[in-house]
Image (tube, rainbow, N blue to C red; front, side):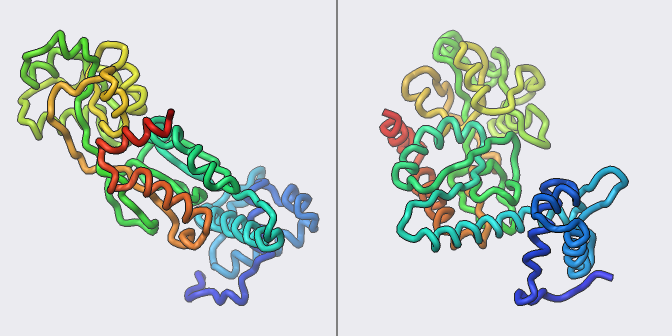
Length: 322
C-alpha cells in the first residue's frame, strides 16, 4: 500500500539516499557497495528502507540487469542535485576566503547558443571566474531534464513546475541571399515563394511545412506546395544553406541580425509570423537561492531579456565580439 502524507525532514534517510544514488549510477548493487565501501547486504537494506518509506519500488530488479522505475527516474536527479549543492555549500564554508570552483549545468538550443550566447560567455566568465559552465545543446523543444541548473528552451508558453522567464517571442521572417532576391525583384510574395526552393527547420511533433503553412494562412497566399525543399534540424543549418545562394529560410531575425546588417542576407518582404514560440529561461524554483545559478540567470536576462529589442541586440553582440 502506498504511504500518504508528508515525510518529516527529521527522518530523511540521507545514508539510504546516498546508497540509492550509487546503485543508480553503477546499475549494480555489487559495484555500488564497492564504491561506498560497505557490504552489499547493508546497501540493499538502505535501498529497501527508502522503498518502504515511499511505498513504491525504485528499481526493477531483473535477472541480469537493474533498471530504474519511473519513481526512481523521478527521484534520482533531485538526489544528485541536492548532494551536489550540499557538497558545494560545505566546501564554500570550509574554504571561506579561498577561491572555489562551481560548475553550472546549462542547456541551450544550438542556434541560440552559437549565434548569441557562446560569443559573449567570456564576459560572464571574466566577471565570475569561480563559476564553470558545462553547456549542452540538444535538439528539440520543451522543458529541460531536471539535472540541468539553468536552461534556455525554444517552446510555446506552458504551465510547469519551473520558474519561466520569456526572453523574447520569436517572429519568423523570410531571409535569403541578396543575389536571389535581386533575381526575383518585383514579384509578389506568393510568386516569390512558389518560384524558389524552401528551407524547413524541423520542429518536434510538427509537420515539416508547419511554419510555412502558418505564414501562408496569415498572409492569405492561397494554394502553395510547401512539401518541397530541404529540412534541417536547426535554424543555424538552414541559414548556412541560404548563404550558399539558394533557398528561402523562415527564421528568427534576432538570431541572424549580423548577416542582415552585413548584407550577406536580406529580408525581401516585411511579412513576419508569430506562431506562439519563444525563447524561455527555465530554472528550478528551489535553485533561485543558489548564488551561482542566480548570477547566471540574471546575466542571461540582462543580455537577452525582453528589454533588449531585436535592433539593439546585434549591435551589442557585435561590440562584444570585437
